Length: 243
Image (cartoon, rainbow, N blue to C red; front, side):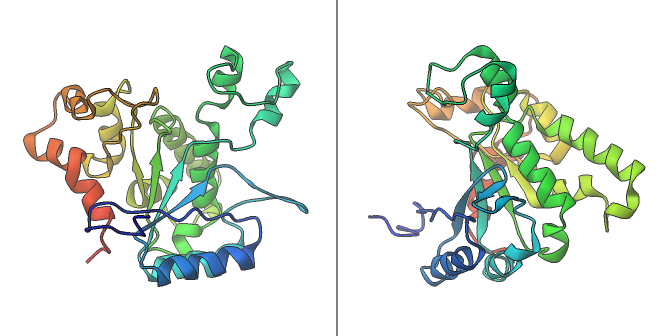
């Protein structure tokens, strides 16, 4: 009903599936034609009938190129990423049911999909081939960021030939993160910079606060300029093409 941008304040985000690379390209072109500022994708590997595939597979380069040329933001929102199949080996049910999952299911799957997805985008060269691509991670928290940075740094030191540039810097340059209010936001900012931290609200879901603006009360140790950036300016800038 809102379209892709209403009053330059509400941005409807088309949801792209990568199941078929050609159709993904068609959908990306449609989104660009509709002047979309952001598209949403599902975290996790692409599970096609022929088997799994990374979003960094060269088959998706035309789609990434289309989004990059139009400076469309790519947002990964948490959801069913197919990781339930991994918990079966631990005696758990693969079925995902909100508010009824077991503690082990949550521990094993909580942020694996988004961490693995960002790792795949970096390791499979999406940001190298499409340097204008910007990615935001939404409703996925931020506890995965530091562990992934450590893993990327270790991979860079052990297999430098597998990267064209420092993978940690690629994360810091291309990825924006919306932490949960209970996360250590200062710790996150130390890792990626306050200019890459986003305020997000999912109320009335558990990931949001009943008074969304109360998120600002958790921004201890930030300057006034950084608080404004996290609460507004960073997201506003992402909704506009970069200069």
